[in-house]
Image (cartoon, rainbow, N blue to C red):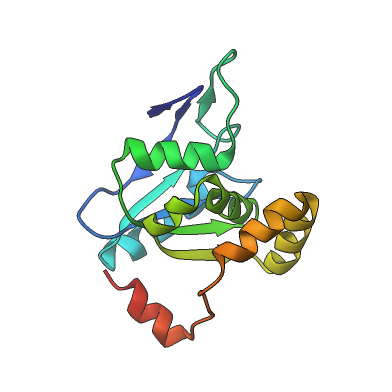
Length: 162
């Protein structure tokens, strides 16, 4: 368990020296949904990290502790584990947390190697998410994406190699 402001976060960490990959579960899951990915990622040389987000699974929020966002909890866990750079994978609601993570502080973008969203409705979610946050957040999100471009599968594989 990682002690973060207002909670004790349950996490799984394979350890090792490989590039860390943090996995964010959907709103209907927990770290357990990623269990079948552990052997594949560790065999490929990655450090596997998954955790139960606040309000899910075995993570315990303090009754009178400070409120926190999923993105703030992710940052607190990454800092607790002393991780400098990592890949981030989010599915469905976990993808929303990943997008929100980009808003915590633009300096954090330098800590990400690769950001992967797994959701059929991702583009719809982003438009809904951005549309509900007002023009300031939309402009901020667009400014962060300057200089980023889609890459093909071979480029993505090469960039993700440990």
